[in-house]
Length: 86
Image 1 (cartoon, rainbow, N blue to C red):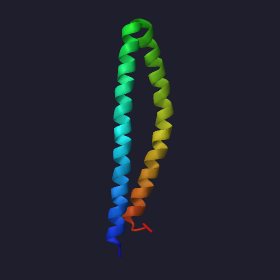
Image 2: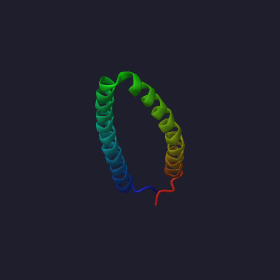
Image 3: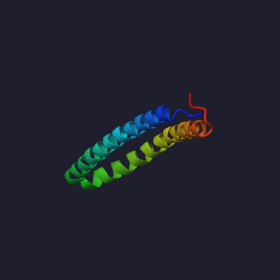
């Protein structure tokens, strides 16, 4: 039998955590966009070539990390669905 109070508390904590991360991501995205626009305005041609190069490098690094994170979330969801929550 699942303790609904415990489960509710865990879900609240999980969504508070997700909310915090979402706020951080939105703030970071806004800051990066402002920085990108300022750099673009200062040196358009050279900046665009460098930006593309760094985007490609960052995307390849992020892909491996994202894959590990998604597997971790999948495991958590599997355990929750199977009732393996302590």
